[in-house]
Amino acid sequence: MICELLPNVLASGRFMPLGHRERVIRALSHQEPDRVPLDLGSTVNSSIHIAAYQKLKAHFGIEAEDTIVHKMMQTALVHEPILEALDIDFRPVFPGSPDNKIDIPVGEDGYQDEWGVVRRKPTGSLYYDLEKSPLAGPITIQDIVSFPMPDPYDPGYTRGLRDKALALRQNTDYALVLRLPAPFVHITQYLRGFEDWFLDLASDEKLAGALFDAVVEQTSALAEEILKVSGDLVDIAATADDMGTQNGSLVSPEMYRRLFKPRHKKYFDTVKKHTKAFIHFHSCGSIYKLLDDFIELGVDTINPVQVAAKNMDSSILGPEFGDRVSFWGGIDTQHVLPFGTTEEIRAEVRRRIKDFAPGGGYVLGAVHDIQPGVPVENIIAMYEAGKEYGRYPIVLE
View 1 (tube, rainbow, N blue to C red):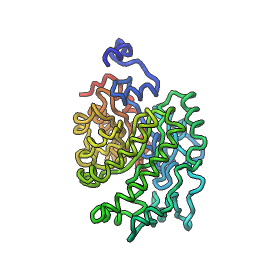
View 2: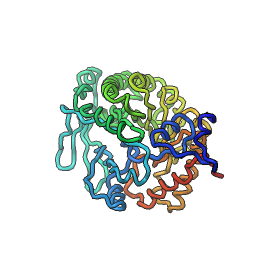
View 3: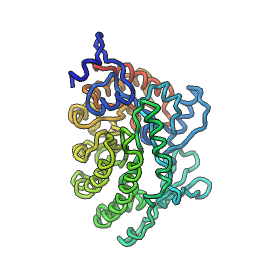
View 4: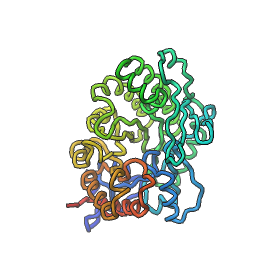
């Protein structure tokens, strides 16, 4: 690696500037690029809430129309001039929506999604809350078998997708991040309702497993269709299933390995069969005890790196896992970004770079989407500090 990188070192000890895509590929390959890559908006879990985005747009003088890329979380698509101004290294590639399972309005403030899940946005709320789960209550395996799931072969998902990815590939040097469906945890929680979902784990693993299998069959087939169209054009394939809480994993490691890991393996094996892209896995909370499992499954990058959760501090994760998986995110959104001063933001960025970046393997960004309470000056300070402290070789005392 040293011989490979020597030609890119200046006499001053700094690395020669790289293109965005090469910078990202080197970092995710655990080689040191010229600087730490920066992300905003490459996935629906590393973007910005629409309310915060309105303030960011005003700062940059952007008047273009907004696009919501995740309705439930009210996540915004970041406009190109802002991405360029912040020197963001990634661009998203989002599949379309199904033709035959479009969202159906429910009242004035709700909707039913493609899975039949109903959500509603309470007055004054920032998000859509789960209101009705179509498989809630007493059910049988036959109810699962007969449930009308979305058709993974619906042409709406992939219409125009290759052209979109090809245009970005040919006309830009950004690293392309493809959004894939969530494997099964999120979806089964919404279908069953959270209370019944957890009760199934405690009292009827056979029923829980049947639902997991039915959903992962659908999502794996959909991921395959998306990847057949665009998997050769993208650099990162991104998916998500939250397996952590603030204080520990969502289920015990033993239950994860027995009931969840085989289904995740089916999904990730499908992804790896159809693309050489890095596998990006979003999983909130304290997932420390599951990281070895995720790495074994072939996950290349972990997001959002919720550093305020138990055992998730960068001083723990970097030394123990940093040579085997890349960390993506890590700038605290629970305390520092919304409430810190710009100097505290800079100190936070410096700390995470010091722990995660040496040797490559780190992408800087917020822990999950930037929320409405985050001041614009703190957002700007985060990216400016990332470019200042993230230059290789990393020398931070």
